[in-house]
Length: 359
Ligand code: SAH
Image (cartoon, rainbow, N blue to C red):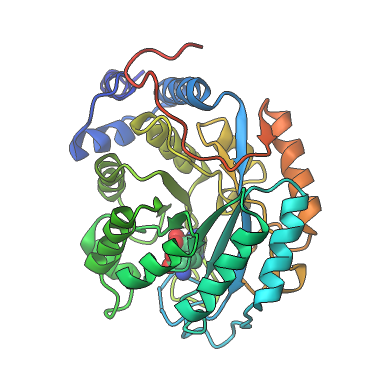
């Protein structure tokens, strides 16, 4: 076993903070034994906080229109081949009603940065969603907006906001985005969301073009510093109509290792085993859960539009009805010893952060 990596894992598990350089050594020193140690520690921490519960979030992909031109993304505005759609308020509410009946208690409204979804349209939608389902949490994932807009949506009932930082290294960010997008603005949005009172989700792609272990170490350091309530990470997957069409996808194994490290950085973090992870590996979501993740995000979008929300090629779960998606994930979670629960899935308190886990 790589002794340096093992010592760093022990220190992280003991509640110590690591430097970016130490995170880099931890990733670089990976071998079979240190990976097993990392996974065992992460699973023990996860079990101490959340038992074997897996939270589910119903993902409603409300629009594939986007004004941004992120180089990696299949719904970037310059992709003329993208089939665009947006859901009506009635369709979104119907997805949520169906999800509620299936046991979902969190709805995630995600989409491209579509100018149609102004505050004037979103506020009544949020009010109605919360009126119908007051026991549910609503998460927004609609990209960058102004602080006032974030505040209005929060006041209308949005509880959480997912805005992946994508990469914590400024020059790497600039190679993945067009010049009009700004690393500083992305980070400022995350701080605004936090200041308003949202539960905030950051996150990054694993294996995005040009990414090095140093960049990933910066991502881990950022997560440790910002302490988001949620962290979405998944492998980069090429999309045929983007400039990165021929880049290799990120690895499932590295994604799982990073999930374990993030679990140790913040034992009560909400950490999804993402659809992208399930796309690069047939058992990706199960592997994510047994590496320390505790959230899955089944698709609740109308089946008729699912293929159009194509951020990357070969996305899974675009053909099934919502109920089938949920049943399939339930069976997958049970097969590895976990149980999907009917719960909002808020962050748990951390009674014993620095003491050894009970199990
Ligand atoms: N527009 C919103 C949310 C939609 S995109 C926003 O900007 O936050 C959701 C996430 O999908 C992105 O944050 C990105 O990390 C991920 N994504 C986009 N293209 C991808 C690709 N080709 N492979 C893997 N993940 C991708």
